[in-house]
Image (tube, rainbow, N blue to C red):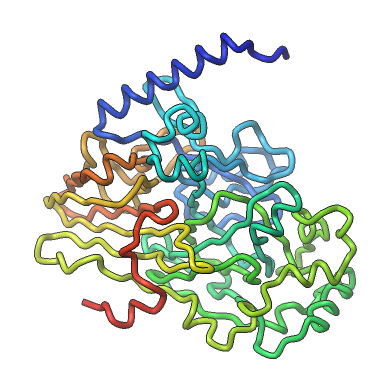
Length: 423
């Protein structure tokens, strides 16, 4: 297939820019996004994404079940045999669609704000629902320096367990995190040496924490974690790098290739190099929970006004605020204007209503190719100016989750703030 000419590229660029500007004018600074489904070949779907049961394997059985929905994503999914644009959110413009990645490329400062555009030249974060029937392998995400060795970016991430998607906990609502204090490199190395003998015993060196809906965790790069079976909202850096350190999960083999996929090829059998991917200080921290556990923190005490906005992801990683997230609950018949420090991706998890001039409606069941009215991207200008949320329901709250890019909320609380901010 011949490459498009420069003239054709300019036409596409001009068309997308015009469509984006028209949409923002019509909606009050908002873009409607279509659902973005992502399969994983080595996992079993947890069936809480509201995706129709007949569509769980819509990509084909060989690609695995759909256990993730990505939000406001400009990050491609790092799946083998991936389809074009897999992992990229699509902007809905009437009958036309184009990727949010294209929209940011053409209208970056307008959409994500001048500061983030100048520093990153892209929307550098994304979020997802991560939904599995059971636990996944003990794994880590590489740091920026480690990922750079293979031309990728590192990935810190965070968790929040929305109650609306966790009426059931599925098979194992516990997550192993880090390593027991006192664990040695030699012990981890021996686990790698036992890889092909069955269970390599990496979990014997860790501890599990019971997962609770309505709470969350902040996970830096280099920290081992084996996410449990709650459906998880995951604001994170825009990367899909990982290394699986567990050889057997619920009787299912984990290929060695999933351990080393984001490491230099020359190091794929270098056990010392693989062990050194771990952040040893973070993994063996005796106060791991104290330094990583999150509970919601109200932005202000606005309950008497019929709404509450709460921080659900906050804190810094290595001194940097890389992403944050909030949960807004608006009671029936109530309207409120919410101001934020920067652009955000939004997903509706309960109820119906409006934000500015765009409808919000949380679906009960979604077909694979169906458009919904539950997901939105909000520009920095609209966020700073204030977005009006209205709950048009007479019976239930309107609840939305929204996540933000780096360094846009200097007022966000620090880890542990929930102990002092319970209204």
